[in-house]
Length: 399
Image 1 (cartoon, rainbow, N blue to C red):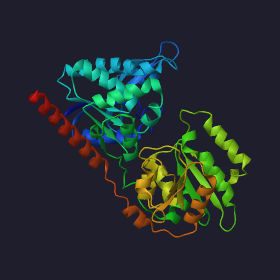
Image 2 (cartoon, one colour; image 1 turned 90 degrees about the vertical axis):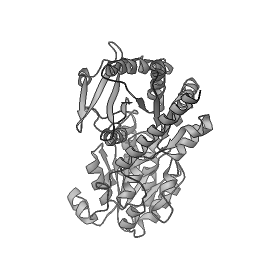
Image 3 (cartoon, rainbow, N blue to C red; image 1 turned 30 degrees about the vertical axis):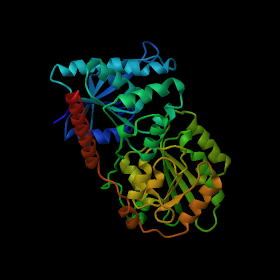
Image 4 (tube, rainbow, N blue to C red; image 1 turned 45 degrees about the vertical axis):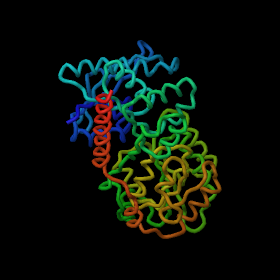
């Protein structure tokens, strides 16, 4: 079994149990197939940004998996181009500690910056292979000149890279990353949880009207998800015939002012009686709302591989969304939903109207989603690791 150290700053914690859940799901599946250690560097700055209380221990457990902690010095808001350097120092310390018990075969970094850049730096210092998974934020980070070259160089220097979406891979290749160094392995979903159900029974459980039309959206309350566009589209649907309501699942993230702005817009549009802000909820609760919904909608401006879209389709719920990221790979007009342009309120309203005005076969939508389990993802990832490691050894032997 490969002995792996997986590194990611964003993972579930006692304070944020839903953080980095898709990274964690992959690591959990890999843990039964490899000798896996998980490291979460904890950013701190003396006095101003201390280590959180929960991170004072050496590790914390999530679903039976230990997540190791290592303090990572950084300077808040300043010199962000050095974050990769600070992270590499933390990773090297933990690597040297773990290597006392035996060699680590490879580093497995999640997100291109600073995790990927820092892990490539550490791997160079210690002479071990490194793989980097890119998940979407890289498309934004490379727009910053100070970070662009670091990210591109790291991805080209890595033993191999994984992209969770085809569209993200295309963006990185266009920026200068070698195409043959990036494999696409999408995220998975739990089809035992996200599956078609009894809509009427679920609405009764959630205390919802059996007759109203319900739109559900899932996404953090940040500007990139464009919940404001969805709210304006809802206002244009009116209340003729059956009333239409909207439930938004998702909590505040790195734009703390956004939730209040969205609630103010809801009031301005006279939508308060028709809109619920549910906050962050566990996956089991998300699945219930998707089973209760008539339509899932997300007006997002940027995605990689959008798990909310996949979970909706797996639940048999038609999707109205934008063609960003890999959404167009999974949503087909009239088959399982509709695609509309980004920031087009009229088009979103028209797409919602069409989706709400017809009957859908939930089981057909669910069956049409060709995506594997987290176990399948883990197998693909580990196979890629083994293939690239073998190729690297062959190349070394030929020199």
